Length: 394
Image (cartoon, rainbow, N blue to C red; front, top):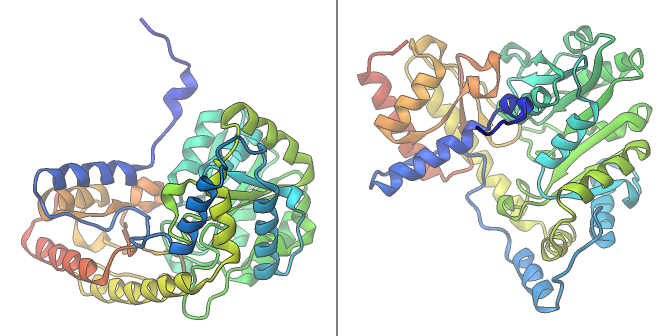
């Protein structure tokens, strides 16, 4: 009988993909499924980006690239970083990654081991906890509370740090809640971290330009006092509707950069050349399509909040970032995962239950508004009908 390494038994999953798979199966059986589950823009990648990739292929960019990424692509990331944050970074601190998850994988692998503790947001992106448990480290949830605007509390976060804490993971604008942590809270956190100089920070800023109602994202890069222990995760997937291109980047302190380069060499070798050239076109090219997408997301956001708050037993805080709402369904009488499963099977609406994002996700569901206004309206009609006609299952 095959014997597997026990660490692999500790790996979790991202249930949004399981929901997507089931939704696709139901669609294949002839059901009209509206998918508000997956965090994927329904827009096509802007044409000038696609054209850049096609040209790169035609021009013969078919070979390996440096493990750290093409110099021109890393330079483009440095330019974008400066334009958004005012912080100058060296292209030699930038790693081009095959998506956002490899940065999480690398950072958590560096700091996670039995006896260590890693702090992560809860509710939060499920891969954080999954990878922490894989390394044998203890996952310590940082509560992300609705009453706090789905922002982290600096005081509460700092109170969870112990002499075993190796890494703190932050995410703003946030998945799954749409919360944006205000600058004054980040100021407090950074000031408090001066008392814990051995704790590294992974700041997931993949939704950095996706904010609404005048909110502005505050990058952890703007705090020079933590730069020597800060890893910043970002990428192309969300901003430019490039999820399938598998293109991310991260910014590393000098003492960690060589380690992640070696991991790249051992794991994925490099990121494909045409996509990297397309990534330059995304950063340096026209941004009108990004603006149009954000205007559409804003309209959809308002529609989701309005319709969710009209549902029986449901309240929905207005998200300030990303493209997710996190309605509170605790007064419906349903448990979150049972409700999301029943909605998919009976009403053919795909959503993700809050517990798939952490222990504190019970009582919530995640709605992705990366779908059309027409489909959002259709989905909410079905959810309303279902809740009015179906007795809760506990």
